[in-house]
Amino acid sequence: MATLVTIPGIMSDARTWAPIAQDLKIQVDGVHVADTTKDATLEDMASRALSDTTGDLIVIAHSMGGRVAMEMGRQAPERIKAMILSSTSAGGPGANEQEHRQTRIDEANADMSGYAKNWAPKVLSKENAQNDALVAQVRQMVEDCGAAVHERQNLALLHRPDATTYIGDFPFPVLLITGDQDHLSTKEVHDAVAAKIPDATSIVLAGAGHLLPFEQPKAVTETVRNWLQEKSVI
Image (cartoon, rainbow, N blue to C red; front, side, top):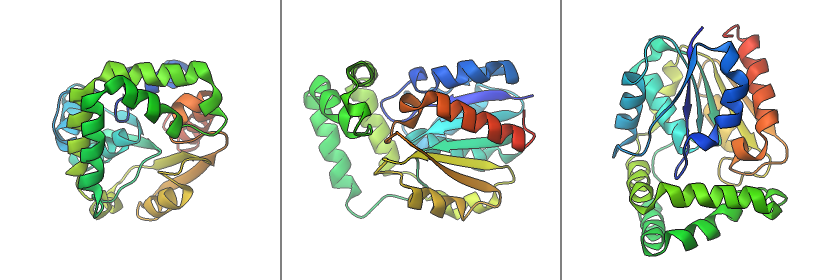
């Protein structure tokens, strides 16, 4: 048995993995929600998650959280029994990323509510973007996150390490899952990450964009549970 560590993405919190963690909690020792709101680097976010827990861990992470999870795997590979990465990537910053992130920071600092309103539909599938309740849930979470956390997390991502330099040393199994309408973390992106990890599986789930845990929680739970059982982790 191990503790399930859930790691949200940017501008997100425990709501990201709550339904999935609820369904899986009887098969783990406990659930810990990583705090990614206080630290200025992904490395420090990972260190906090490790220091706030003990023993063996199953790590399940979304988007930015996936980068935190990979860093946990670098810092303490002996503690990780399995890792699930949803809608993420592994490379370092892109050539024009600083300008792009600064624009996002400026927009959110000027009007976080308006920023949340514009952002939410863009990261959902075409169908889910029409789900008023889901869009409202995502918007509220982003607003609750706040502009200061948004800026800190964007800067942390801007200075992220290139995880492709170390994920090939992971001694634990990794599952990568993404949505079939995710235009950020595509199947091709995930397949490329999986190809660098000794024991990795890449799966695409239907009916979801970039916010896969919110859009298809039941499918995610079933996929994760089946994979963990296949790997004899639970």
